[in-house]
Length: 218
Image 1: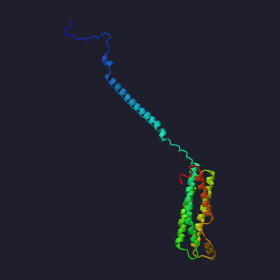
Image 2: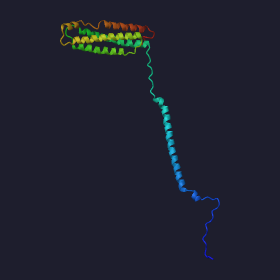
Image 3: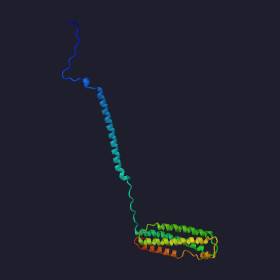
């Protein structure tokens, strides 16, 4: 017969109770929780990026009509009285400028030596008439009869300019010969084209005055 105390036998497990130490893997659960949190973070970042892109798209859709270049509005066609009034205004200045130009050309035809001042007068009047002719040609005239009158006035002013240049050339000849001197002495103003331009202006002024409300700016 053995003596002494026998070692305690392990207590039997209760029926139906799970092994919590083996079932509850703490390290595994923590790792899974970290992966889930990281996935949620990435999803949140993607969500913010998507919302940002949607916001940019909505903003572009809102401002697109403002960024779209606008078509220029069609120019308003001036009425016939307005076109006539503008044409007469330029012709008034041209007719007034013909007076000193006519005097400068006539001075170039005076017998004897011609002063340098006379030649300078021709140059100044040539510049004035050239600018008026440019203004005349830049008028936005569309009425057929006014376009024809505008073109005729431009031709008459071109003749005035030619007369001024010819007078300066005859006056400033370094070695005048009998033929050029005889041509210079025949200079006696702008001549008939200047009268034609004045009559054209007078005709247009009469039409402007006779139209209802047409002469209010004169």
